[in-house]
Image 1 (cartoon, helix red, strand yellow):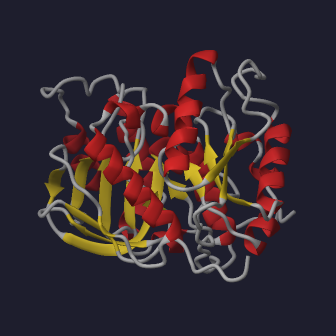
Image 2 (image 1 turned 90 degrees about the vertical axis):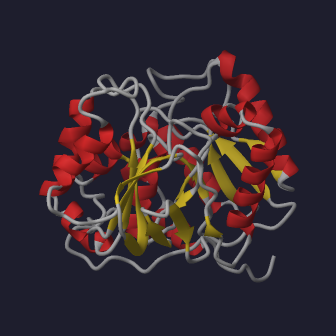
Length: 341
């Protein structure tokens, strides 16, 4: 396995996964937290969603009710071994995380990055899985899919929206995973807000803000050059509003805010101090306070992350942002044409 540090080396070229085809095998895997018995129906519903998209679906062995080790589905080495097996298996064409949690940091150094370079596959997930996207993007250039998972996403939040919206999401995800043309403008919603007007164009880089900040303290940090002109996206779950302010300052001190050309902020969830419309300071005020005189467009309250259902954010793919018009456009495909079998 490649365990050389990223820092100090030139960032790798963008590595797009191979496009999926109808009938391809998608595996749902426990890449972080365990599967509680109450969430087994979510997995079953996720299987149906993916099958409606035309894919075959299999569950990885560690995705089993009652299997756990502390706060994880298994020991980090076991999760890494299962993930590596999926990465090396030519039949597996995509991997969907079951849930987030607190485990990915434990196995970042155990991932077979050569298998990713040899056969890049879409990995879908957010929360703790956003750390996986950032680290693999840093190591290999892989386009990671900050997108819905099984338990809180396909099998959960997707079931709470109208059939029309669910059909729209299924079409969006299918085109993202199978199409070699740019998706174009993502479907907006009334929650979106312009916090600072302007336009930007650049690669999407981001995830849960605490994982972005923590990743940059490791040898798996995303090279700063990756943030040049980037459309930085982030979201957060739990904690205090002051934590968000602190994480943003970490990104400021790291030089990330100075390099970014725009920002997309997800709908906050369960953050103490941000409850209700009259919260003071508001999330918008916190963001603009840290940005200071950095005149970059900011689009807020976008459905990315724990508020779900998620609009997919393919890490590394160029996007166009118009905060005043409240549009976010994917300008490049997230996958590349597949040749052969």
